[in-house]
Length: 268
Image 1 (tube, rainbow, N blue to C red):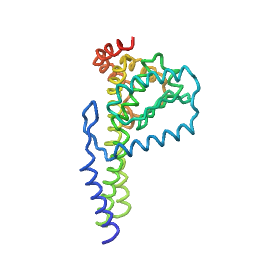
Image 2 (tube, rainbow, N blue to C red):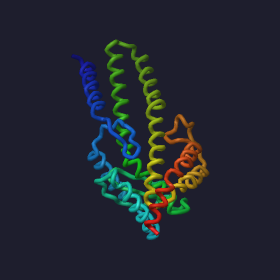
Image 3 (cartoon, rainbow, N blue to C red):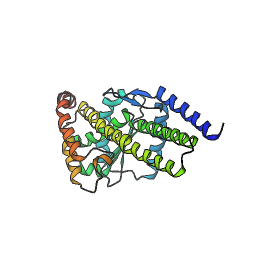
Image 4 (cartoon, one colour):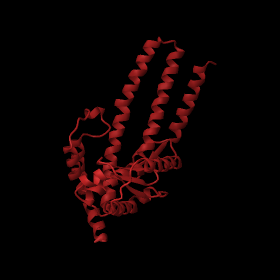
């Protein structure tokens, strides 16, 4: 058996194992996802990445900003924690003009000072932090990694098949390039946009359950949209368009108002 035959058998075996063991369910939404990574493996990657980030990125010593992020983070963690039971929650404010935040597996949350400056209220900060935490409780990062493995596996199978049939190398390269582009535009990017919309929905629920106004998502994203800058066409973007995102948030917010009012009363 030549090397391509062995590679083909290995690719089929790995792909079959992945398909058979990779079906999981997203908490809150119940969506089925293809996810081959274990939570322990994912969490370890998150913890080590966060340790490295703290060494490489300046940490803010602004007491007011740190107190704000700790307060908002702990309240959201109390709501989201049931979907991430082994989390080692940590909330860090990083000194950066970037208006952004992130959450890594294991409950490691970073908020940039640029976001705190842009946000007009605790509610807006909670919306962003809830969104980032929702990405982790939904295991979107592991899902994308698993999808990349699957796309690469299918590409390997195609390459092996064409080699076995002695397809002209130039034609083979064109076919594989077309497959790569098609997989990216037709599969990976739509899932990335789905992840963003799913995190918006779950993040609003987390924020509302922590006593923060879900309507703040609309006001925050209108400000983000006003920041301007060149953006790719929607079908080539990892995120929904600003207008689509704002419209979705406007539709979602009323669903969580009752939850918000109940939770808000606990903190007054």
